[in-house]
Length: 116
Length: 111
Image (cartoon, rainbow over all chains, first blue to last red; front, side, top):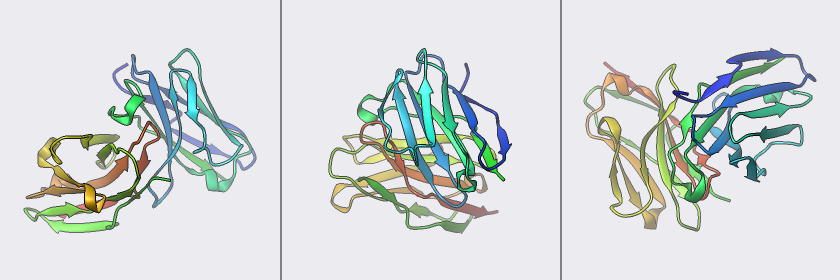
């Protein structure tokens, strides 16, 4: 596609419910990244994928958070038993590869999550 | 663990003023440094990046940044800002793939 797309653009959920956020990277990009941007704070790294594997999951805030990527393309970020502090904008980015950390990351529009 | 500090949370300038946004990082190894910008209502996009070589790097829209290894700094500069530069600016360090961003600096340029 022309750019990174994310869905839904907005999600309102009740505390305790599970949510699934989707990211569709730029075609041909093997690396995919998830970040969280909370009000007044910078971008918090969550996880990245090189292909289908995630070398580093230490950025995930708790075991309620999980992410997967299948087929080397679309990724889903799942938050189980949502809490109010999970409210944030979840950003996805992709790059040609992740090796060496030099590739430009291209960001999607984000999913704005509100947990009531 | 690596971290990035941006000293200014909000900077307000008049058009044609010069801009310098501070960025310091803490990381012991080879660093890849980036500045990203988010214009109102738009996605984050790359302004410039540094890996090696000339420590003064030029980016889009007249921005430049200087890597000073001894100071662990990568400050962003522009000689003369325009109203259209109003945005949020993020400094980032990316050792391997787990990019770490600073908290961001909001720049407001008054016409």
